[in-house]
Image (cartoon, rainbow, N blue to C red; front, side):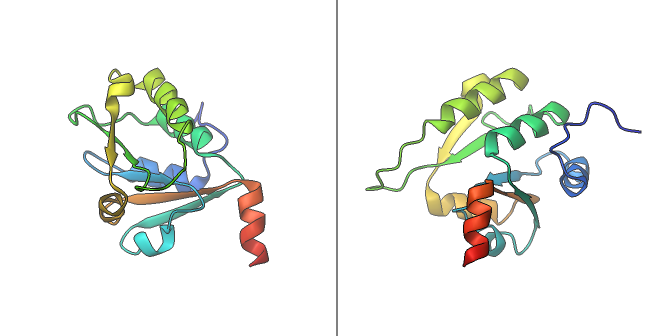
Length: 140
């Protein structure tokens, strides 16, 4: 029997994480990411009702980042002209810093469409929608 597994990790996500090996990538996304179209060649796992920091923290409790990779965490850059701010990135860096020796240096930024191409080669995409985002999607 497994112990100390974060309760928010579904059996499906736990299975996916346990299948991953060296150089396999997992993409954690929010409701704005085209997970299903990007994930046609990989596994797409839905984590509705949660937030990315919760899932990131839970995954890193049971899985380490690839130490052979200088920048094992990629963030999609904000598109030119977009007024979106990314304060959540500081939260991601704090979480990664708890588990990885690279800390904030583990991150690289990738242009949006290059990020999409990278996501298409991932082992899995984890599609994370808060409860409100999930309910809004159900109304459509």
